Image 1 (spheres, rainbow, N blue to C red):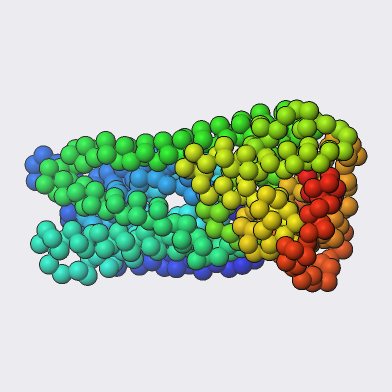
Image 2 (tube, rainbow, N blue to C red):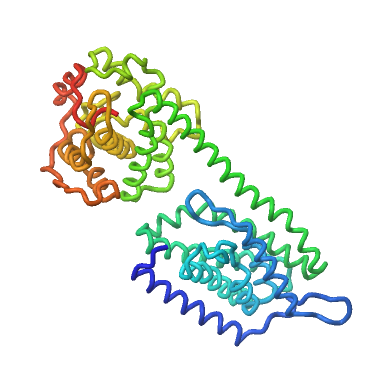
Length: 456
């Protein structure tokens, strides 16, 4: 993470709070007797008990899985909560401090401030949830203890998510509300481990430390499920990417086109702060937006002269064909509007459905700008000399409100693709005409006229 001023301040505040809680827990609290390892004979060893739970948490942390959004999920949550339940704030401090280290930290793949942030996001929730848990009366009652442990787990993970989201929000400029919504699935999955944590603590008390090791199977299965989810998604993405590249390579001029359009569209989406679901739709929609060109004959697709009216009509069918090809894949339902409508014009003179303004799906408007910029800055059969990026940006501005959504063009200007480019700025606001008012443009388009950014 880049250490900007706001992030330094937040890190200092969180680190001070975590440090104060750590010192307070270690000085004011003693490990609860339940944490002791029962050795044959009359000896109960608190130290070995702490070491056991620190070690178990370390194993869980070593099995971390990086999720598609960049977050890291591990199964150390269960042993941490079990240790909190058994040992109180002091044990929570030791386990939170030492039991959640990850291999990438030891290999120095994470900068020091990232290590501090990660451990603060675990240490503070662990100690606070332990303090809350030890105030609950009647915990000798099984039902009360179970409910209290689950509640402590909810407090722990809620605070963990809030602290982590705060760091990411300051670092990336993302809305905390959006980050919290994106953590909903992980929240429920982690909370489902709370009963497992309670059972681990009960087995430790009744059967001994060795019985806790039996929980390695369900915890590893949980980790395997996360890993399998990531692998299936990666395989799906690679399949989609390979399919897109196969379509692009039909034409030597468009090799790599879909991948670059995907990158530009996702960058615009991030600037516009679209949801994670919409960002994923742009990811796959960007790769698949030209899949319908499979059905366009080579004589039309590869023609270097101006297309005839009939040939233009054939070419203009590719968004419809693409949507028809993708329609049977239920998982790609969010991408269908992007694929079908990425050539609609803001003034209603596009194709295939002549939608106007906000009638065009927002993600299709984003992809349209990305597609046009990439097309203009690359050689094409109908224009062998590509435009310079400055010229392409000027065209996006020129046709803002006509072909492109001006708000999307504004967002594009704030991406890395327009960094350092001279920006002519937005033209005067144009009223979006009715479809009937755009009849002349439609007729011209059908006759084969193609403005600078209209084709890819």
